[in-house]
Image (cartoon, rainbow, N blue to C red; front, side, top):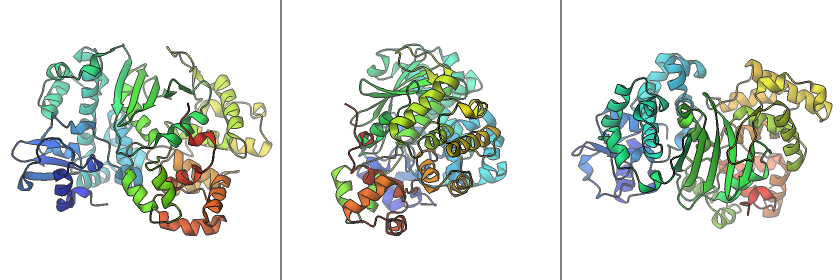
Length: 494
């Protein structure tokens, strides 16, 4: 898919004519006669094929002079799954733009994080997406502005800066250009559900995904491994604290039939875009489950697992460094013991936060805070203590960096060079923190046990050879194999 689905005109026309929601976010349809752009599943009568032009991004549509459709709201479609399945420059740049790096640090900051020149980054994004990093960030700001307009009572002047705009005039011009409505007109058109409860600092929104989505292992894993004070399962929702660029937040995420209900409490509304992006990444909402499951079904021994509960996602994280620390705490101990270790660190070294609903008390400690602790205070074997202190010191001084822009193979190699890091620890971090869809835990005891029960090879080398047919989706195969066990991580909490 390096050239993008938008180049396959015949396939795009078929998707639009059949209103196929699976392709929302893969490409956007611009209509020459109306000068609007839509998602593939737009409910209106499809335009004539000769009037359709296809673009790889909303930003490219906007740059070409098209406005967002008021019916299908293409700015609210799931993100392209390409950025989660690729590790090249463009994909890593898109993950960073979604994380708000351009808004905070500009294009030079984006290029520096990627290790390329500004010119190289701009050229590659323009070639593949039809828009440079500034245009892509602008499209994202417009989407954030719309969310704030529809879900908060904020005055427009405050809202403009919270959405990342440098001036009210730019905010007004962008909203009019993208949505063909003024900010006030947008607010007057907002859905009734958006006006139900407008509490300052609290935003309620819907996170879209491509169906099917099986919430069992996704929320089950997050709830079963929740660190007290940082995470909890309450009243059908997974809740956790978020450390964000401008402040902190609390996210409450609830699975529904056709979306994830998301309630965000933010200390600084400028963090809205980043908070949404990190929640989407944690829940793997931009995945293409049909493509993944179709590939895994080609193995006759995996097919029954996929057919029984399709749409499994990989439970990920909102903080890559936090997950790496927790992976080390979980080496060769039970889930309960790992939670206890982490909870002690949180109480002693985490930053306290106030939770209006009670239950959550801290942000997970930073690598800097953990690097400053006394190693003798850690209740763990000396070898694992060395593993822990080496990891947090390298994270704190920047020797090791884990983030949305991480190159998966390079980072895995760097992790394996650390004392006490074997394939299991490196691969679970690659899978759940870095988002590598092909990471595979061939040495995991639960995976080997499941493989043996299914009639698959159970030795790591033989299982790895068999799993070559599952590529590039071995992380998802891992979820299906884990799900054969009765461990709480596989079940939606009651």
